[in-house]
Amino acid sequence: MDKTKSPILILIVLIIVSLALAGGLFHLLQKEHATNATLQKELDELKTKQGVLEKSLDDSKKILVESDKKLKEARLRIDALNSELEVEKSGKEEALKQAEQLKGDLAKQNELRAGLETKLIQTRENMRDLEKQLGELTNKKEDLEKKIQDLEAAAQQPQPQNKGIDLGTVVVGPEQAKAPAAVEGAANVEPVQKKARNSAQEGKVLVINKDYNFVVINLGSKDGVNIDDVFSVYRGNKYIGDVKVEKIHDSMSAAELLSSDIKNKIKEGDSVLEKTR
Image (cartoon, rainbow, N blue to C red):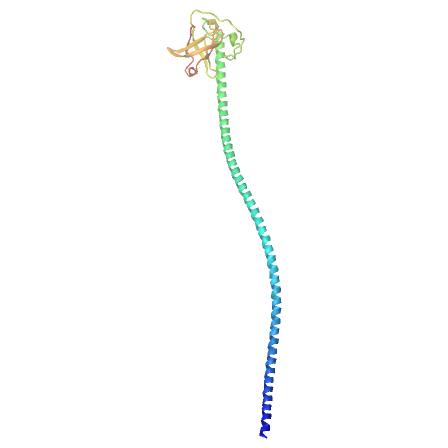
């Protein structure tokens, strides 16, 4: 009986062990199945995330391409702006250069204007001086005319000698007929023939006109004075210079001063002595 029960017990034990192993295996299988499900779920999630990431990556690539495109456009725009800036800079430099040149030209114009204004002021002052000198010359001319009129008035009176002053008609030689009268107020101009004489004539200076460079002496045609006669002027024994007769009157003559230094030396009342030829 014991021999009969031993195989049964062994079989039962084997069955129990088999059931236990089967239960363990089932449990392990369930656990593995659960793990696989979890892993599959995580795998699906990872795939989903991967899809999202791939989409994000594609979007990023598109954004990157668009950014590169915009960057190129921005660089082109920057290059264009730099070119415009260079042109504007060149234009500004040219404008500054022209402004400096205009400033220099303006300074020169101001200097020229100042010079012209100075010259204008000087010219006006010269004009005033000339007007003053003209007034003085006019006064001297009037004084000279008055002296000549006084001499003419005195010449109209009878003179005891031929050498007295006799203001009548001023006569000139044919070669001087077109020259202006040396004595203001002279009239009835006509040519005369030269008169011969044997001795040198001696007289005096009556009137001096330094502005017109002539003197009037008290010798005329009645004394044998002729056109182009030369007289030496003396003050006492001092020689002053020479004068040459240009116009003659009956008792007086107008003679040109032959040197520039005599103008400041000769005086009324100086003696004149004809130079013999």
